[in-house]
Amino acid sequence: MEPLKHECGVAMVRLLKPLEYFQEKYGTWSVGLDELYLLMEKQHNRGQEGAGMACVKMEAQPGQDYMFRERALGSGAITEIFSNVHHSINEHPKEKVADVEYVKKNIPFAGEIYMGHLRYSTSGKKGLSYVHPFMRRNNWKARNLCLCGNFNMTNVAEIFDEIVSFGQHPRVYADTYILLEQIGHRLDRESERLFKEAREKGLVKKDITSYIEENIDIVNVLRKSCSIWDGGYVLCGMTGSGEMFAMRDPWGIRPAFWYKNEEQVVLASERPVIQTTLFLDSSEIIELQPGQALIVDRKGNVKLHQVLEPRTFAPCSFERIYFSRGNDAAIYRERKALGSQLVPSVLDAIKNDINNTVFSFIPNTAETAFYGLTEGFNRHLDTIKLNQIQTEGTNLSEERLQSILAQKVRCEKVAWKDIKMRTFIAEGNSRNDLASHVYDVTYDSLVPYKDNLVIIDDSIVRGTTLRESIIRILDKLHPKRIVIVSSAPQIRYPDYYGIDMPSLEEFIAFRATIALIHERGMQHLLRKVYNDCKEAIQHYQLHHSCSNCVTEIYQPFSDEEITLKMVDMLRAKDVEAEVSIVYQSIEGLHSACPHHPGDWYFTGNYPTPGGALRVNQAFIDYVDRNESL
Image: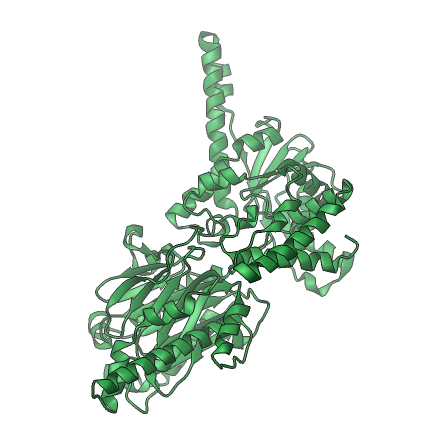
């Protein structure tokens, strides 16, 4: 209901056959370009602030460009960049476009390696200059580097200091720029190493260049660059000489999947994207493992390398709850499971009154969890029916039997996402009034003052939309009770690995906990946690390890106490219905998503020292901004 912006999406295509092969077999040389478009369009959910793509020509001659890039801003960026690319193609006569030799010499983006990126800003920095891919140019092909990624580094300052210590002067203080310079520096050193090696072998001039391009060790470049990285990442790159790589963080926080056949290698952030684009079975697609790099050298040899040893296994659970496309078979099952296991808690909330309860969902993010919830209730109702039939036995009349069998879960589409309200045009109370119209309801979909209304969402973040829109608009139907169900646990902590989440004090769970602390006269706890956070940061600076001290503020309170306080804060005075909130448990999350244990948003268990460092600093900043605490 309050959309979180995802970190980003990546896509790569490496053709393993010459363009002539594709022209002859498929009637077009642009197979790689077309596939990149599909891979990006089908990941549009992962980034709508901008998009970019790049291409490397493997057979360009001196005097011909060989690395191309196109970028654009806005939700229509994919269409814009590919329209521009095709416009540059269509400037040439049709018969020439079908001539591969002509194409390779004269048409941009007619290459063998393609890279695409969809961006959501996670640093607050916007504009075309921050849209991936980033390029580092050089007159030597092997030193040209193009980089994009789905990532956020928590220790940018350390990486920055390292490259400055080498004498570099980065122009921008942002993790992508800094990684570009860091990896670029290592690529330069690798080229210099090979130059010396070639000279020792007696090679001269062009032979030296060929030796360098044929022997670049990208694994060596990555290994010397990534040892200090702290964060969640899938980093993708290609060089001007034809090396392609993609590397996943050693905690497995961010996802990547790849596929290879005799014609191509394809990589994307999500499995079903590759499935749909290439008409594959899910078993044919391979997940890139933590700390692993997929390398395709300029000759087309494909290898996997364990660049970093795997660390604490912590793939992002929010990928499963919310971000990834729901048509992935495993994700679909998991989201249904998240809904179905909430049945006991919802039963308590409605006091077991199934007959007078209507079930619905917040469109459209929680629809799959809704199916799981209602299936769970149907199973529960089947058990009740069976017990009634067995209890009443031979005394059961046909009318009574029909009455028992007629019991069913009542499902309605109660809430509708109306239009994208432009609430920024108003201020104060006017803004809140406009926000209340973001959703609409199906009138007469429940019995006024008699029916409970259970409505499920994937998560509750700030609570603003709940208070200003959802609860108020649902109250117009006059339910006896409104039960808001979250398929995710309470979100208590920001993400620092690539998801654009609110700051600490914007989380309704955090605000409710602070309110309880004040109500119970426990302000000393805030000062203690403040001091503990400062000590933890000092410890990090000495030992590069850190614990999350912010967890201490939640310890005096049960989940139920915090939830009740949230209800008190979110239920406006003019709402008539009783309101309650049901959250997923941490145990329920792990039961539904057993292979994605990364749960730091809910538990504060950040898998990397940098995550804990950042949340401690966030709490210090919060207290400093609120001196009355």
